[in-house]
Structures are given as structure tokens and as C-alpha cells.
Length: 280
Length: 280
Image 1: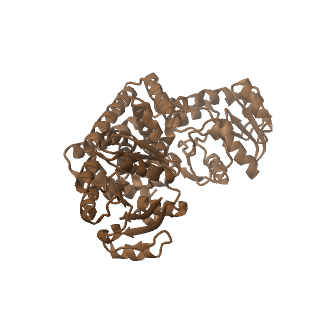
Image 2 (image 1 turned 90 degrees about the vertical axis):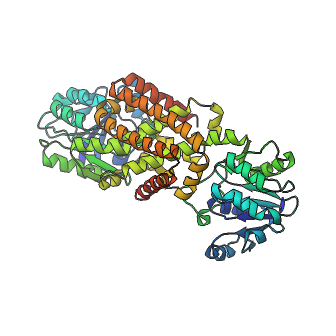
Image 3 (image 1 turned 90 degrees about the horizontal axis):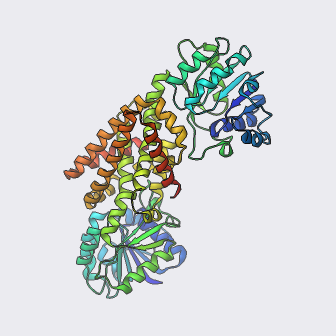
């Protein structure tokens, strides 16, 4: 489908894009760039990589599709750096977990003939880095594509087709709406799980040995990369604050009912939670 | 090891005890009783069941070990009901998730020559009922055994040996201490996950289609049985209130730092959460 796919700063997601594209034969050539020289050396021996460039500028030469796979706070500067070096007609996308800021800054950084089509494949793991990447990471996952009104429709279509070809269900939504949605279904769970772990870390260390499958599942995402999550919190602060505050209201109401021994209300809350969970 | 194992009201845990005991040959005979006649009929055809009695009194006749597998709020009344019918020397245990109330009421309900040794195998699932029970449910899990000072040491030892033989690591702790521990590592995560689901249930239903593996993992336990959890909330109200209030303080501090854009503090909180999670 694409002549040359360039992935800048491949980690878990960027590496998985490369592996899945190679496995499905969706690009004739895969070119990578990583910031650290040691990473570049390691990547050169990967079968899902045809060339590793020493600079982002070199990596995008000849690219038909560029995937920016940095944390969200580095996407705009990387877009600005490659902008003058992109061949006319190249498409640029990303895999960042926030979209409102990324979409606007990315759009502003790039030329009109190399449009930015912001993307967010909703796949991840508590394991990070290209070493943990996998060609199956995207199977049965959702990918948000969040164009601005100015983004050319043909570019949006091609990027949607790319993610579909990798096995993702594509949802095209407005960047602000995206950030509201993921604040609730992804960022809030992360804060809840990380805070639960940080709280339990203050307690008797011997309790860890007693942890069951429930605690392990509930906190799995707390193993995620703090650097990546810090950037997400910065970018999506307003929506996360809103979701977090409303969640705390619910938790407060639960606590009040427990204090008041209103077990009918508590049972109703548990039942509403179960009904939602069974619909996932 | 035991001549006759009797399991009263087998659900997910009771059924799993029966299956694991049968597989490991730990009882010559397994007798069950269930409250609903339809369940008794269904249980009769299970290969891990030798006899299904029509009453608890009949079921415990000839028993060497009795496992009370009801929700925690029904254990004491069931113990009182079977007390006059237990053969001298029979041991009684349970699989309830709270222990302070259960240990005291169970002890009071039973005779001195048929001692109650309260237990809590920390295994479970969002799936409920004996239909979902499994002989492998207890593998690599922890079982709390929570005797009172009056509980005969020999009885405690035999019950500990029973759970060990089923593949669990046994931890003998005071019932009050048990309830404090599980309020933190089991009941609090349940409240957090159920409340997260109940909160998200108020939002746009279309968002459910976007849920990733992170949300699914974080909320899996919210699928648990509300009837069982209501009883746990009643029994362990004080300890859960304490843990929940402290957790809310942490969540409030996180929210304040986010409102203040104190991203260094937020990153430190995420890092503490990750460190704890990696130690599980």
C-alpha cells in the first residue's frame, strides 16, 4: 500500500506498527530512526526494519507515510524538524494518546502538501519499548483518527485504510471529543490504578504476598511508563480533571452510604457497575 | 486425608474445593447440600460429588470436614443449624472473605468438640456459581486461616494442611488483622472498580465500543456478584471505610497537583505506583 513507511522513535506502538506492516506486506520498505545511537544499532538487526537512519531528516527522505511514535509532548517538535524534508504528498500520522494539542500543533508544523492526520491506536501494555512490540498488538483494537476541519479528506481516508489494514476498527472523531472520551475510559483508569498502588505502597510490605488476581488485574496498567503518562496528564489536564472530579463525587457518595449503613444504595451501585462491566 | 468432606452451599469456591479434592484424592467421599432443589438435582450428576443431601443436617452426618461456602452473612446461621448434628471430632471451616464477625459467631455457634477454623482462600473470579468452578482455581493462591485464641491448635493444623494440599500458601493471621489486610488489597479495589464502572455507565454508551485492554483489566472484578459483595461491605464496613477514606485522600492530593500543574509531584506518584505494582 505504501512505498516507504518511516517510523520515528519506535517504542511499543511504533515497533508493533512496523512488525504488523511487515507481516501484512503493507509497505515495500520500512525505515526507522531512534534518538539513542545504541537503540539504532539494536534496531538494525530487526527483520522488520530495512534501514535505520541517523537523523529524522534522513529517515523521512523518500517516505510515503511517516508515523511519529514519540510521547505526546515531543510530537510537534519532531513534526517541525522533518517538515522541510518530507517529499510532497507524504502523509504524517502519530500514535499519541492525546489529540487536541497534538492535532493543532502537528497541523501547524507541517506543510499543506504533507498533511498531518492525527491517530491514536488504543492498544498498549504495561510493558514498554520496541523489545515488547508485537505484530498482534492491534488485533481487535480501536484506532481513533482525529482530523481537523482543514485536514484533506483524501489523506484522512488513506490513514484510516492503513489502520484498518492493520486489523483495527477505525473511529473518526473530533480531537477535543477524543480527549474527553479517553480522559474517561483510559486516563481516569490509569490515575485510579496508579493511585491505588501508590496508596498500598505506604502499607505493610508483607501484604503484597497476599495479593490475589483481582488486585493484580485492577492495577496492571499502573506498571505503565511514568514519562509517557506525565506527558498525557500535561496535555489532557482539563478533561482528566473533569473526569477525576466526577469520579471522586461517586466515590464520596459510596463512602457516605457505607458510613450510613445504606446497604441498599451500595448494592444498587455495585449492580450498576456490574451491568456496565458486562456490556464491555 | 479426610473420610468425608461435606460442602454446604457450593458456589464458585465450594465447587472448586470439591473438584480439587476429588482430583487430588484428599477425601474418600464428597457430600454436598445446596439450598435450591434444582441446584441439588444438577449437582447429583457431577463427577466430583458422591451424594447430595436434602438438608444441611443430613449432609453433615458422618462428616470429618465441613466447608461452609455461603456468603459471609449466612455462615453463622448455617453453623448453628448443623451444630447438633456434627459427629464429634469433625472440623468446620468456611471460605468467606471477611473473618472477624465470622470467626466469633461461627465459634459461638459450634460445639467445643467440633471446632470452627475460619478460612479465606484468596481465589475468585468475576464468574460465579459452581458451574464456573475449577480444580485449578487455588493454584499458587494464598489461604488465610484465622483462628481465635480458643481454637484448638491441632484443628488449626489440620485445616492448614488441607489448604496446603490443595496448592494454596497458608497464612495464619488474627481475624481482625485479616479484615484490615483484605479491606486494602481486595475490598478497596472492588469498590474502586465498581464505582469506576458505575460512573462510566452514566456517560455516552457509544464510548463502550472504544474500551481498551486497560479499562477491561482495571474493571474486571466489577463483574463480581453484588449479593456477595453487599454482605462483605456489611461485615467489614469499618475497615473498608478506613481504607476508602485514606485512598480518597490520595486521589484528592493527585487531583490538587493536577489542578496546580505540579507535574513533578504527579510523576513521583506514578513512579511510586509503578514501583509497587512491579513488586506484586
